[in-house]
Amino acid sequence: MHPLPLALAAALLAVPAAAQDSGPIPEAQPLLARYVLADGRLLIGGGPEASAAAEAAGPALAARIVGSAGAMPLLTQGVVALAVIPREMTPIERAAVRRFSGGLPAAVPVMQGLFLYARCDKDGAVDERVRPVLRELLSDAGQTRLRAALAMYKPLDAAALASARQQLSGLPTATYALRAPGYVAPDGSLAIIGSDTLTTIMPEILAAYALHAPSVHFTGDLRGSSTAIPALTAGTTAFAPMGRELWQNDLDGFRQAKGYDPVRIRVAYASHGPRADGKTPPAIYVNARNPLAGLSTERVKRIFAAGAPGGDISDWSALGIPAGPIHVYGARDDGGFGSAMRLSKLGGLLFSARYQAMPSGKAIVEAIAADPLGIGYATWMDSGTAPAGARVLPLASREGQPFVLPTNGKARSAWPISYFLNIYVDRAPGRPFDPAAKGLLHFLLSDEGQAIIARHVGEDEGYVPLDKADLAAERARINAL
Image 1 (cartoon, rainbow, N blue to C red):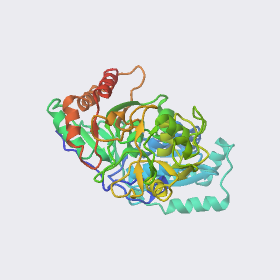
Image 2 (image 1 turned 90 degrees about the vertical axis):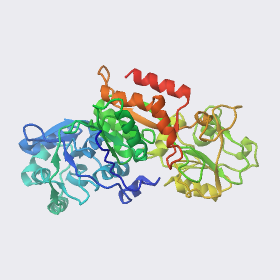
Image 3 (image 1 turned 135 degrees about the horizontal axis):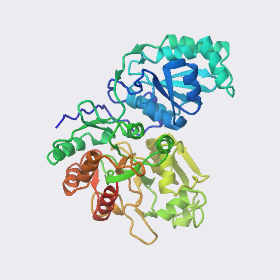
Image 4 (image 1 turned 60 degrees about the horizontal axis):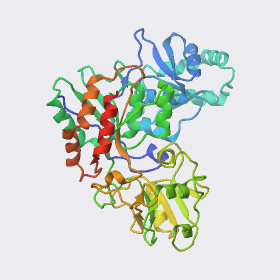
């Protein structure tokens, strides 16, 4: 069995995406260039502007039309040399690129409102093959060709063009090693790119699976869930393990590049709690002095969303406790956790007009701890970060059912807003799924694989094996791949 190199450092805490631009990241690995075609041209990606940029640069470039959202994951994984985007990158996109590449991408304007993005390594260097292309597009001749091909864009003014050329002249270069597209390495191993929460479980899983399939080798690159779907979209991972659900930007990029959705396989429940020695999963929090025994998911929707069946609940008196307006806190609806929660847990409804968007899970819980009238929906919380003035609120799937907490036990599957350790796979309609990857998925959901997960339940991430009903459903889903 090949060794499992795990490239990681301290995991990112639950912070806003913008802060991830400057926060800690895993140790960066040498970047690979998968975008050099057999004829020596470099592949670039984006919307129709990518074709115009390729023509303007002369014979050095070829274009792949995948849209703005689809280009970003391909850039992250080095499947395109440049992403041609008619906008600035979002904070979440920048954070995902940086988490994998080690450096923030270089943004070079070539027309007003049109940017070419290039990956930078941890030292801020672009691939030595890329800078001459950018220089050509910023030359007088390149600018003339761009203006002819993209008449709907205004050209850069003299000051902006001079600034872009100066920016480009200051970019250092490095040699990015060539690699063919795909997830099979030169040694024949299959890449697994994804969540850094698997760094203790995955080596044990792979070692055990090697006894069943000694001829199949996997190599793990576990730097975070934000690297998983870009790799799946780019075709550089056999499957994408994630310690969370897809965020909207993940899904948008995959859909735009592929034209269909990835398939989700649930492998374990994601964490348990509340507990003092690990992460508590996403939950509803109230002030510690709030006497409310619990809520049904129907009432959660009526508090957090606008227009839920039954009408909005805006005052605590409607829940049988002393009157007062309900102050609702939660994550930003910016394509990340807040958006994913709204779509998957609130039925896609818009947030309530009373909803106060906060920059982080810690900020949400701190606001609740200071506000006796507060309630909030927060993401994973590390031990010691949740203040004593807030508590996790028990929930029920339906009115009249018992309230439960996301504990490690038989009631774990009853937690109605469960999150999972998910593995997303690229199953193109009408095409077979890789049998080697499918075999490992089967093993993860086998009795032996679930027993390995159970041995790690006390760790910081605290994954919990699936119950019989969920296990049967996921096994059936794998059989259908």
